[in-house]
Every structure is written in structure tokens, then in C-alpha cells.
Length: 491
Ligand code: SAH
Image (cartoon, rainbow, N blue to C red; front, side):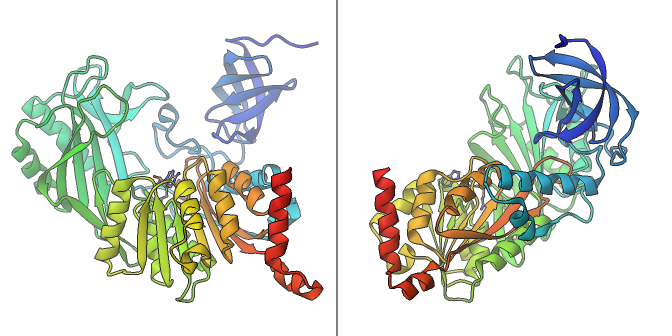
């Protein structure tokens, strides 16, 4: 008989699996329970918060018998914060979880056989110490119950701020900088922004550190054009932390969840800080996109470069290139690199970064990859652009547009390197690419976002060497593919 589960029911379950979002999954008489803050193997008592027909979300009341993978979270705020979903799991178990998640998606969504996927796997690259890796921190500013200004993080899905100036994913120096700003606010009676009323001044503090250069940027996001006592604030900050090389104000007057506004003004020092990835220099402004874990990014990009198999003369497209990070990495070893990115400011940064490094063989285009690439294919400027040796893609979570994939298939590069931050869309796209012309040769996970559920994957695809077979039986490969295209059109 079916049980009727309802809100408030307290049950005992064993956690058997983890959802992609990091929720533990246990079954009670076949009824699935999703429980935050649990680890595979935990026997626990849980309370149903929201019941649906076939499943429920439940709250962890007590761990009765802990999993052998369970550890004490290093951060005392781990449960309330929700920023790191995997703090209660050993790091080894976390790496296994991530690799398995990718593997399962490649099998389930990509349609690749399990043995094959296991056979071409290169082991996940984890961090030596999975904390303090973020080069960027964004702290919301608000008030505690007693009315004192605080910096912290939003509790769960709400916008209540829980005070904490030392997130363990960020740098230790953030605490000193934040305490300095909070004490300045108290002394000078400078208000924190209140989302409910739209009143008050300081909304967020953004801190960035170049890991190689050691330069720090502090940017205050403010609900006004100016701050009282700006000079005093700068003096106080640079006296406290000499590594600060840039202090800015970003103006955000809107009633919105978007953190940054459009206008940034330098209060003190430089407009940008610099950083280096494997000897390539980057200028980073307050609003630029820059990979947040530079140590792992460098490893990932070296792998992408290795997969690209460059000897110095190849032509390469780098689609979804951002500020040109991968493009410039590749350009040092390629004949020519063409980068494509949808955000104009990022392309401006990419061009600037190329100049900064004396790189002259990289060209950048603004636009959607699924529009720029077909445009070139239909009106080619040159043969090398039409038939590149390598195409690298690093799309956002939604993966590549089908038009982009189709054009890549027509361009027939020898190799495709796919860098992905979402293995479900990666698997979907690989299925299309590997349907006929390409073969998946290798894949490897990189733990860029330790203690969270997110994982990066780098894949190598090679063009199938069918031409040799065609020659043997006397068929021209071009003819074969055009017949295939005709067949598709008829379907
Ligand atoms: N390769 C870069 C950025 C990767 S993030 C790096 O490692 O730093 C993905 C990038 O794709 C973002 O910069 C985003 O702005 C861009 N983007 C999103 N949709 C796009 C599209 N349809 N065409 C081209 N670029 C796109």
C-alpha cells in the first residue's frame, strides 16, 4: 500500500546517492528523499519540509550513523551558507563524486559505452589544498540585529546576511580588508544598503587578488555617485594592506539583484590589476571576467594546449573566448588564433591582453559563435580560416548551439578540444560531434571549484581517419560526406 508522506513527517533513511546539486538522496519504502548536508552512507533522521507525490525535500535532523566519507566541515557556517555543498564529505570522496557525475552523463546522455569511457579517462586533477583558492570575493554588506554594519553571505535562498568576513574559499587577507571597511563605516557613520527600502550606501565589497603579481583591487559597490570621506577610506586601507594597488567605486543605483552597475571610478591607484597564467599576462578591471581559481585554470589550459597538439603553424579557432585567456595560451604555439566572444568589453580586453604580451597572431571577433562561425564559413576570407587545424570551445553551462556544432563539423578540423563546465550539455554536444566524423579520444576532469558541486572537463576529439579507407575502395571522401548531407536533408 502507498504511504501518504506529508510535511513534518520524521523518518529514518540511509543516503545512497547525491544529486547533481549535491543533495543526498535516500529512499523510504521506495519514496525518494532529498536531504541537504548529508553524505553518501549516512544513516540519518530527517524531517519532510516539502512533500510531492514521488519525492520530498527533507531537513537533516540528526546523523545517527555517519558515513565513512563524512568529515567535520572546516567552516562553521557550512550548513547555513550553502555556498559549498560538499564540506561534510572527504575531499577524496568529492573527487570521486565529480568524476562519476561526468562519466555517468557521458554514458547516459552521450550514449558512449561504459568500457570505452573508462578506457579513455585520464584521472581527475584535484587541488593539493581545496581551500583559499578563489582570487575574487564578493561580500554583501548589511546590518546585524543590533544595527551594526556587517559583511557576510546570504543565508540559503534568502537575502538575510549572516556575518562572516573569512570565507574559507577566499584569501585570508579579505578579512583584514573587510574589517577595515566595516570599522570605517562605523566610525564615519556610513550606511549599508537596505534591499527592502532601497536606502543606504554600501551594497557590496569586491576584492580581487592577482596570485602571481600579489596585487589587490578593492571595489566598493555603492548606491550613490560618491562616498563621504573617500580619501580617508583610501588612506586607511592602503596603510593597513600595502598590496592594495587599486581602489574603485562602482555605482549601482538600481533596485536589482545584479551586483555591479555600469559606472566604475578609480578612487586611488590603478584602473586594473595584473595577473599571470603560465607567463601570459592579463589586465583585470573591476568588471572583467577572469577565472576564479588560477592554480587549477593553469593546469586545465595546459591540458587544452596539449590536446590541441600544436607545432607552431596551425590555425585555431577559440570559440567562447572571454578575455582571450585560452586564445593567448594557444597563440604562443600556433600559427594563427581566431577568438570569438559575445561580450564586446571582453573582446576589447582580449585585444589589450594580446598587445600586453606582444602577441600578434591572434585576431578577435565580437558575436555569437553560432553566427560568426557560419558567416565565415559561407563567406570565407581565407582557406586557413575555413579549414582550421583545431577548434577549441569553452561554452557557458548551456553548451554549444546546434548551428555552431554543425558548422564545426563542416569545417572539419583535425582536432576539437571541448572545455566544459556542465557535463550534461557536454555529453549532448559530444553525441552530435561523434555521430559520424569525430571520435572521443580522451577526457579529464579538473577540480576548479573545490567543496562545491561544480566541475570542469577537458575533452579531445579527433577526426576519424576514414579517408584512407575511402581511397582503398576508390571513393573520394568529399563525395561521401556530401552524399551524407543530402541524405540528412531528405530526412
Ligand atoms: N574561455 C574563456 C571564457 C569561458 S566562459 C576563459 O576561460 O576565460 C564562456 C564565455 O562564453 C563567456 O565569456 C560568455 O560571455 C561567452 N558566451 C556566451 N554565449 C556565447 C555565444 N553564443 N557565443 C560566443 N560567446 C558566448
